[in-house]
Length: 212
Image (cartoon, rainbow, N blue to C red; front, side, top):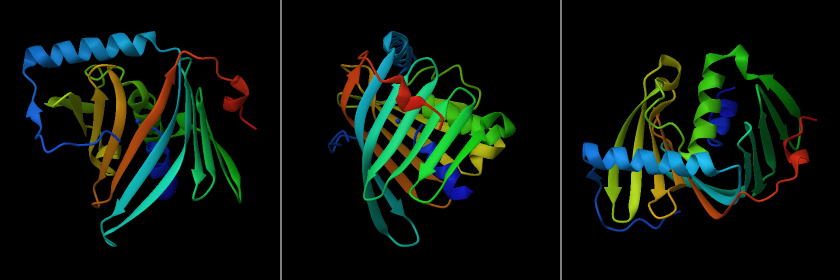
């Protein structure tokens, strides 16, 4: 179950990081960042991209790299599909999550769990960066790093606190869109998901979000 929850949370979001350090944004800068990010998010009807995920396991000091493709529809649908080195797909469609691996498939009603609801919210908001300051589940602090905007989300609710210490979103300041999601788990594992080849507002086959 823990693996399932952690995998879902990755659905929730690589810029090359220069030697520049993070600089905390002023209150005025943060307001501008939020306004611009929300403006862009509101204009996104669909989004599709490829992604690379690198997970560092604290107890092994080792990295696991996987790749896949993500599709998002602003009506509340998300398809997150791993294609290498294994196949694994989950689909968020309304209040249901459909999960399919090479060995089994499962459908979950996220209303049954407050934790699932929180994870679903992280997944959807991480894609666009929507509602960074109106979410009571997280405390948000903004930074700049060269031409990158950074939002650090600290969980406020017990269920999410038990899993994550912080979730860091990096935005391309020119496109005002998320380019990287970094999840720091309480036990020390770190997962970094980098979005690339991002395309917005193109037609997406709705069958990709079907629950089978």
